Length: 425
Image (cartoon, rainbow, N blue to C red; front, side, top):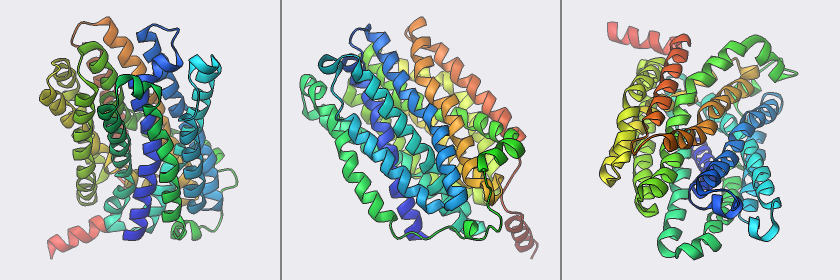
């Protein structure tokens, strides 16, 4: 289990590194380089729109790779998704700017971003299911949290690379070529990930299926459509919080508040490190007390904290900004620390790879794709404190709270019965 969990963590970290490095670059430099005919605000919105294309592609990737995972096994999904995401990320670092090839530059950027999202849409389902389906029932939440730690590790790697280059290069050097280096590094990371995943064994749950689904998506739409919509709505606020903190706030603080890139990247990275460290803690609590109670608690905390978070951001004071981000990401991890066990338990094994991944990635469209664009537009309409962004995030938190309230608890009944028996004894 430890070897399997470590390989899943490393793979998701690498693929999310690929995905996050674009978001950081979009917030800092891609607008002027690829959309120079736009105003600064419009250029940032255009770069974030290209960022959102990756989220739109993720449900399509979950359908494509989910079909492979439900028909041919979880293991092939891990290799194919990693290759696709890694190759497209390296290619982003090679795209000439608008000044060199004109309108073809943003077109290529959007196309490659779409391929990134397609690969990442398959990654989560494959990595999480391979771990969750190998894990013992009473520790499924804990072991499944290892691939969930991949996103914060990938984020820290991506932002650490950008922070290092930003601190050591001049603005002109960073804009000319420095921003490309983290994209090129994705090629090396992808090769490492493929080596780690080469020896993984297939999931016992998949091998135990007697009758494989011929068209998994058709079965999910026919028999589980309500579950997919509820999980997408439930997860929307988590994506919204994460990308409001890591992407929108970076652009807002550097452009509107005059906070330096280095300060903002440091505040964000520090909060994400704490969030990553707390992921197995939340997962262990999910094994002990159930998945649904933690999700409800995280949503409620998020609804209460979004207005204070934007108020602390607007101060421009690094410690207050960090505090606002930290509490928001603690609310986030309270929900998402148990999701890797929760979603697979909601679906039967024959359509689990498709159903869990489609629900997870549709939540990304609702929360992740729209949040940087909506928050940028809302912040432009307000004063120094972007109250509109706080209202938007609070509304999403209440929507997700309602969706989680309609979902069932899934912690295995045998585990609960054993705990009751032990307490009685």
